[in-house]
Length: 296
Image (cartoon, rainbow, N blue to C red; front, side, top):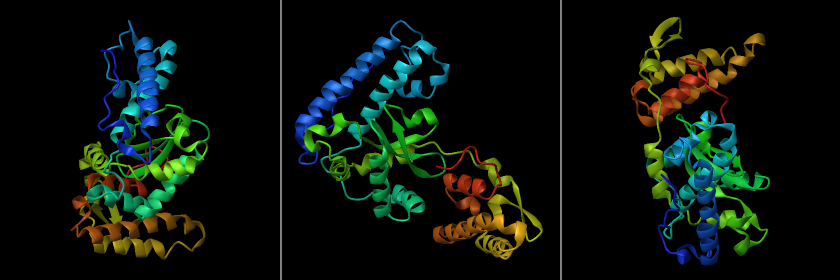
């Protein structure tokens, strides 16, 4: 199964004046094609030649040393660019809607802050790389990758990515990367990003909901925690935060307060009625389960 460059979902000139037809032709027809050609060459004759490129990027540790680097660079370049083309639209810009917007506000507080954070991430990437909005199974986050590394290789679901390699913008903006990033945000196709968010894998939380937590000396299932019990726990822990060795419980007290606000804001009867991603997030924050990795 040889990889191929997907057709653009719009005309070369469709994103003007933000991204020129010349840049789109050069970027899509030359650069993306080069990644595909090199990925196919690296995989030819191997047992991995028929594996989907996105799946391949989740299994890099299994690849022979001789092809791991070329696959990371070139299958990564193929997948990243396929996501990139689909993430833009002549009707793009504006703001996300629905559940994605709600998840973004839970992480960034406002869409304006998301934009500022995304711009800062894109500008902070030294040399060649990408800035991404991803989903980690519990929340949306912004991460950066170097070269053509893909978030899929880190167990993250890419929702939106901006290419900050110079070939993505130099014909239009020369060295003015900030102008390119701001222009790119005006062509983001949020409908596609929302579909990716809806399809992102979420954790199985049935076991988490059954785990027990002590509330005022009484053990109750995590899923049965209500607004009032979350407020009670936050208040009891909050009263201890200024006392010597108990000062470290402050972050957990704040997490209980945040949980109470979320239950109230969603109009939920208890934790079990929250979204699976939120359930796991609070289970990690409150140490009902240990964190799998440091939060980004």
